[in-house]
Amino acid sequence: IDIGYGGDPIVPWAVCCDMEAGSYTNVGTAPQHLGFDAGKLPFKDRTLSGVFNSHLIEDWDYSGQIALVGEWLRVLRYGGKLMILAPDQQRFLAHCAATGQSVNDNHKEADFSLATFKRRVLKVGNYHSRVRVIAETNFGDYSWGIIMEKL
Image (cartoon, rainbow, N blue to C red; front, side):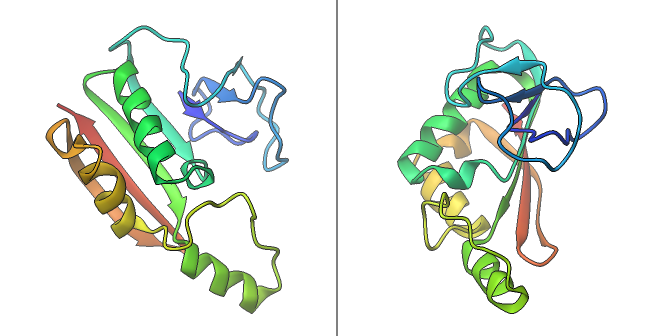
């Protein structure tokens, strides 16, 4: 599933999920299949092979992110992949200043980055014992990504 897909799913065959009222962005035209809260997935435990989200998790504070990751891992089967794409907040702010782009006031943590996600979410949430990081990278002007496999 692609949670918070915003009209532009990761792959054409992804199950597109966003808020109940529908997407709040116009980055794509793919139809929404399911509407629900990203922190309360309507799936049974260990039923999905993959959960993807892009530029969504930064809209929660660190304690909320810990809860989100727990919920997303709940629905993943063993060996399933959790893929997160998110902004590095300080690089994002610098990008906005350089390009004149508006900042996103929904971002909750001023120091949010791949390093702080690993330290303040995966480590504090004790998820390092439940996932194996397969890949991680910083890329583009301000984004980072991580792919984890559920153990």
